[in-house]
Amino acid sequence: MPYNDKPLKTNGMRAVPQGFEPAKDEWKVNTTTDLGNGRAGIDQVLYGKKADGSFAPINIGTNGEMLTSVTGSMLAQTKTNADAVGGVLTFSQNINYIEILNRDTVNDGIFTVNGLAIHVPKGQPFTKTGVQGTIGKTVTVTGSTSYVVNQYV
Image 1: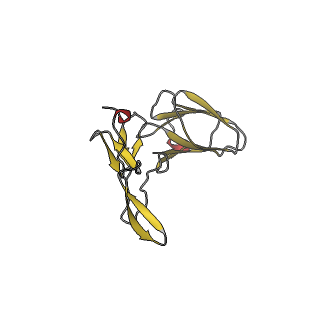
Image 2: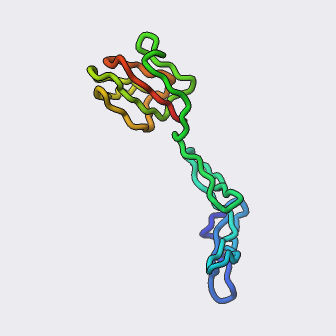
Image 3: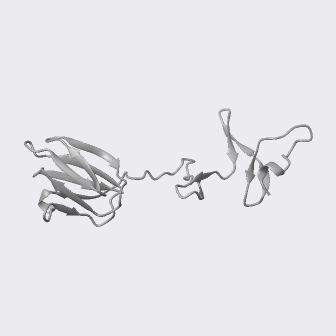
């Protein structure tokens, strides 16, 4: 039954702070714990919505900090022009986040990632960013003869 078909819990006179638990199909009163210094902590499980539409509990560490994992923040692999075969760099994992440095001081570079052509001027970086398109493991490079490509996961 949806949350709006369930009566709110009351203290006999008015509704009390609460959250709806779909798995139990009921409202749960938010209880608190005195944390000292005029602060109180709410005793409940919080969920976050994932990209695929499902929900997962938000993880809390032993000191009360929220545990997070920032997508695209971990350097997975670095390739340079020395690693290219026929102008193509091949990474071990699909590319979702990339950073490019065109070290060539004469030529601009075109770095094709996931079917998308990224123009990087001579001597300039392409700041780390997510790359959509047709996800793959290769970067095709034309123009530039000296470059560094970092892949992040």
